[in-house]
Length: 250
Image 1: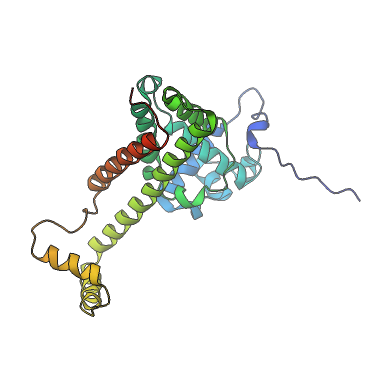
Image 2: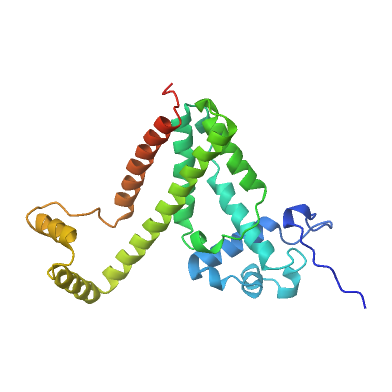
């Protein structure tokens, strides 16, 4: 008996549903899935839930997508469409241009914090190609060979995604602390007890210094403070990359 072969083609290689007037578009499916993930978490994104959001039957959705892998690809591509910057942002010097790309990429990740852990297996679509093309265009003026350009872009991408992940964690902790002050008090008391044990001399020194200062020992866990920290870190990293790769400042 012949077995049905698995179709491993990406959704982008398949034609969109034909007909005189398809009821739904891939963009509508992606938007519905993103809205569910933003409001309820990525785990809530199911074919049944998307169909309900669109006001369709679950089986109707399979006319447009084959499975959740296709849905995830559409979600990823929709996010990367939002991450694209205006062409004018790419016409300045390489640092200004790649900074614009990095900022916009982080903004999109922060707007969809679940995506940092949930879209790691998403198939790349046309907007992923456009995003990478914009990154290449941004650093084109740096005068680097291809391998060095790739290294530059990859390093910045790693910084953006890592910073966004830490920022999301910090904001999540801040929100939890605001909702449960008693938990914060208990955690602080426990931390002070550990510091006073003598096992953490560097932390102890910082704690003693902060106790005598009106300035906080670390950055505030607010979106504004975390964004400022991102900006300082990005420029410091670009300074280092420019020196390491011997990029001319002009």
